[in-house]
Image (cartoon, rainbow, N blue to C red; front, side, top):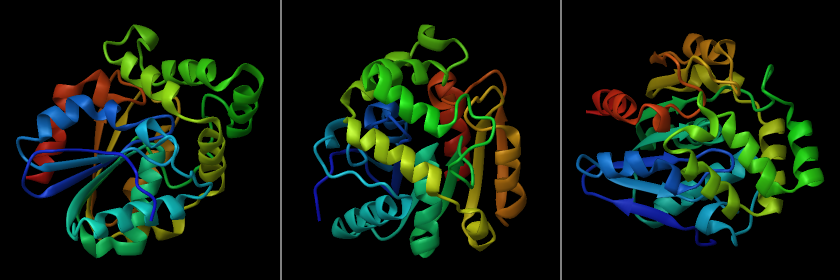
Length: 250
C-alpha cells in the first residue's frame, strides 16, 4: 500500500479528520491544535493533495475510502471517531458503508449524499474546464474564495490557498471525476452510527436540500446550522465549531 502523509497529535481515542477537495491536513490546523488535548487526532493528506501530492490519486470515492481504512488498519486503529468535510464527507460516508462498525461517532460536515451537486457555484464540468483553461493554481484560489463569506479576506483563507498550491493537476481532475460519479443516497438509511451533520447557511457548494436529505435519511442524526458561514465553518468560526464537535464526541 502506498504511503500517504499524515499529521498526528495527541493521545486518547482516535479522531480522524478527512479534508475536502483542494484541501490538506493544514486546513485542520485550528482543530488539530484544539482536539489534541482530548483525542489522538489523525489527519491524512489524501493522495495527490498536500504533502501526499506525489502519491497516486484516484477517480472514485470508494478507492479513497478503502485507502484510508487500510491505512488505519495498518496502524492498528480499529475504532475511531470520523469527521469528513465536503468531498471528505463523501469519503466518510463510503467508509461507513464498508466498515461502519469501526466508527464510534460520525460527523458529516458541509457535504451531501451525491457528488454532482445541484446549485453548486459552478458545475463540476465547468470547474474541470476552468482548471484546464487558466491553470490549477489560479482556479484553486478562486474556488477557495467561495468557501468563505469574506472570501480571501478571511483570517484562515491562507490555509486554503496554500493547500490548493500543493495539489497536483491529475489529482484535481480525478477528484472532480470521483465527485461527479459518486452517489451515496441509497446507503444513508444503512448508516447506524450516531451522526452529527454540520452546515453553514451561506454555503455555495451544498444547499440546504442536500443537508436535509442527510438529516431525513440517516436514522440517528442531528443537525447543527451555523449562521453567516459558508463552506468552511471550521475556519470561519473555529471556536464555535470545535466546541460543537467536542460536545458531540465526549
